[in-house]
Length: 225
Image 1 (tube, one colour):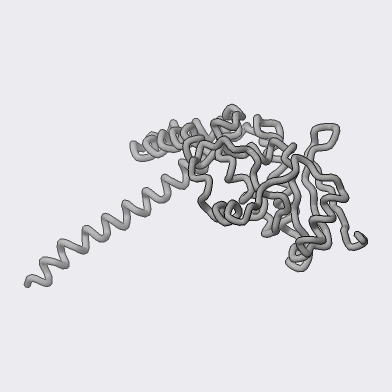
Image 2 (cartoon, rainbow, N blue to C red):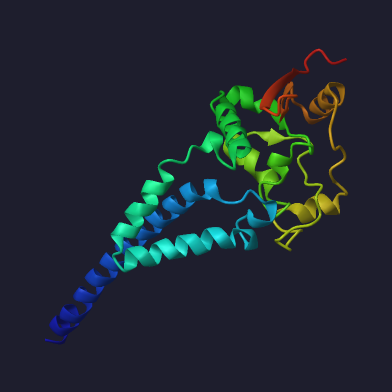
């Protein structure tokens, strides 16, 4: 008898809880997806970009859309989707970031053998990369995460950060051994010297050209004496 009572009480709770968790996961996904699309129309200011304090505008928008879905205001959601459908990333406030990430995904398609003997180099003069976040210590993780490749001269040079844990995520080890960023920009010869030192045969440099376009330059360093 007691077992039946417990079953009749717990089973509905489990079903309701599961249904609620599934619904909340769905609306969280929709709200986040919509907000990501809306982000292309945000002001492109490094102080408002990031996963922590810099992302307050993003999380406020996402929270607003969650409440709209929770309150079943589907007309508001459809209206928001209609607005963002006309946004063209290459012509948005974040067109440079779009170019950069597109190049990184292009590099990601290369074979694992190629990646094993190749590293990335992004000069500190490429502001679009080093200002991806108000957290100055976050950008060094972006290119390796997307491409699955190592970087040379990849430590941050900007000290100001909206995320104050500057020695987290392995940075303490770099500080312990006295490793730090050395160059604002490296020449081709310096790039290949570093490649030889680190055991790479080539370096893919990502930079801006004279037309303000983000491009790749491949430095083949096998012939370096």
